[in-house]
Amino acid sequence: MYIPALRRVRRMAVSQRWDKLPGGQDITYDGAQGFEGKPTNYEWEYLGRKQLLCGHNSTDRLMEIKGKPGGGGCDQTYQRINCVILQFIPKIVSSVSKGVLFLDPETYNCYYAEYYDKRARPYLCYAHQYVVRKDGCVGIMGFLVSDIQRIHSSNNYVYNSFQN
Image 1: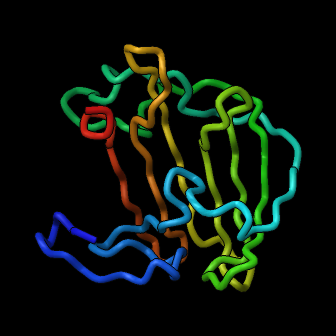
Image 2: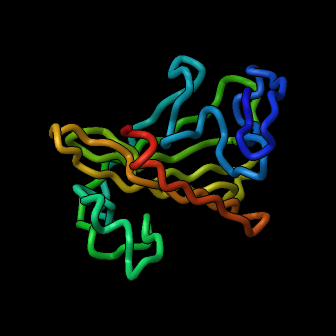
């Protein structure tokens, strides 16, 4: 994997799906954008629905608030959504015991994701915000990943580079 911050290529084991990415990131391979893993490696359970404030149908012009990046912190882009809640439990070796995803009922984009360690304590929390592009497709605008146990977070504002 090429790591831009180090300007180096680093060898990484793809079998360690829940290891954090290098360079101080809190993002994991299978946890990117809520869930990026192989569905058959996990046991799934539908937990119902819950109304949450989510970064839904945002616009890229609201990313900047008085010259400072807003990303997931811009309250003008949040709407009340009746989210679908899914829980997964890994069948593979992982550092998480379970994960809970809060999904948009129309697009199934993941607004929030919670991951728990082997002792069932909160471990990582993802918060995503989506933007409607000019072509009508929905893309991720940015997200915040928090490591609750280590009191650390990584924010990513990917809209301008991801959609380019």
